[in-house]
Length: 120
Length: 107
Image (cartoon, rainbow over all chains, first blue to last red; front, side, top):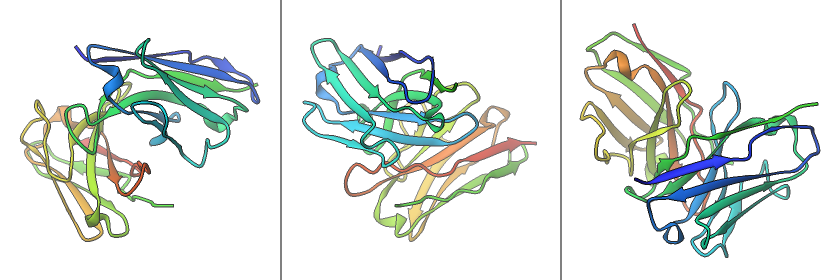
């Protein structure tokens, strides 16, 4: 069974740093580009970041550019999101997702999400 | 930046048809996907590439996309379809913008 399991979400003070992880299982992780998508409480979905299969291409939403870094370790089947200089508006559930596992041009596999709360 | 606009809410009676629109500049030139999200759950893909329904998604869900508007149609709406729905556009480059979201209420 294809699974994505996020972890690392906590309550953290503004200006702090945090690393989220997404453990993949049930498929060949190294064959798929990955993304992070977040959802603030009571709000809609927001794409955050993308990383290519090899990790040599990354993209970020303007709202996190320069503060967040996406990476992956294909030997550990794990995706990461390093978050720094966190702000209260970064408070959200963070999902990792695959685009194109079953269906092209769509996020077709999602994790269960991990909650990040930025507050003093 | 590119924006996708959806109506905040849509109400429908059981057994009737619900239509959810998603508007964006030249949206018909892009691929649109649709997601359903029930409270406390992760999003689920309903429609990809404007009209494709993944395996396991009921036939009552269908999509279209033309001009500046994409539409998700739920035919024969059931109580279990009460959820939030999001469109998403896939254009040139990794700008995976989501729509504003629509809450569907089955009265």
